[in-house]
Image (cartoon, rainbow, N blue to C red):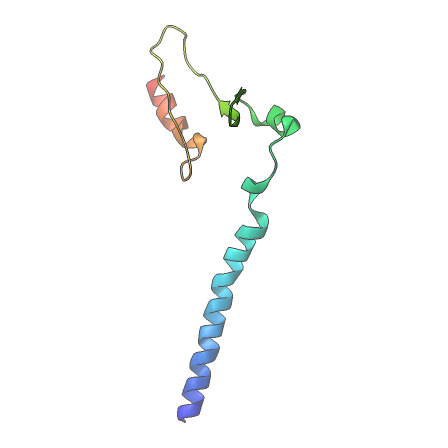
Length: 91
């Protein structure tokens, strides 16, 4: 009986590992953020781009030219579209 319980526990652990591995593998192999952003892709992405010393940077300008300038910076864990609701609130 002891051997059966150990075998069942190993099988359950293997199933859990497999179930957890599937979403991770899907993310790794289907991650859209690894796509190359070339000039052709930028044309369909919207916004504007500027060449800086470390590469090309995407930016968007919204609102009237007479308003005060506010710069919102996104980064590692915050994509730029996260600011959309805040911008719409300010306008």
